[in-house]
Length: 317
Image (cartoon, rainbow, N blue to C red):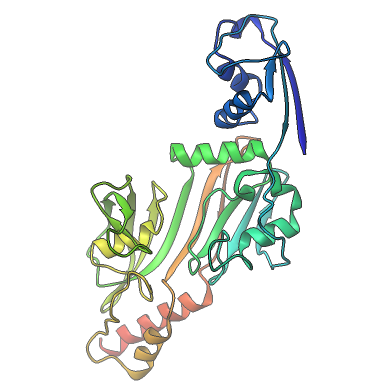
């Protein structure tokens, strides 16, 4: 797909750099993409290729002729998508457990991205096929996908400004006495390369949590993210010694409260994924600017786990 753009520099922008003017005249595209087009000679001024830092005069003619990159290395596949909301700008999805979001080594097929390419082939020219943020394979819940380049730019900007709100629910080990904030930088684990960890050299990561319900040896909690680091909730809750139930990577050994019934033990042993669900998402619509919010219910396996915790608590009261 070739994009052809033309514009003349208005008086108000005269004297500014090429990349600054291009970003103002073509707000659909990111500054990084425009700078790349300038470097490749796909954005020319008065028929000549310039440097990004060159300054322009009023009336200068800007022409862009560039091929938008396609996601050619990924295959479209027919995969069921649970669409909560859709319009011309975005999709809101409810992801099930066991579904990888992006293809990677060992998971090239069957991902959410493959399914999006099948149902929405026009997404192939949008970065990451429109996926703005991801959920881990075994985390369930709500996600947003941009359907246009303009929407992608807007939604990524909201994430970066921390104005997009993401709320999760989880079941963790231990009884939390109250809510709090975990403000601890996260980076690659120094030994276990598949894991993340709280490390001084990591990137800023902030998680807010509050207790919804306490049980004998577990807590049902609500979590809100300020940042979106890989495995953030799982790492932060492990860091404060309240690991997510069922977490195969950060959960540690199964912890059973005293005098647990055989049924309750079976339920805990059978829960093989992290008990984490993206429940609510709010953002500004990228076109209308209207504040919008969506919520998806907790999946049945987590409901069954919560019911088992309630029954266990009632048996020893």
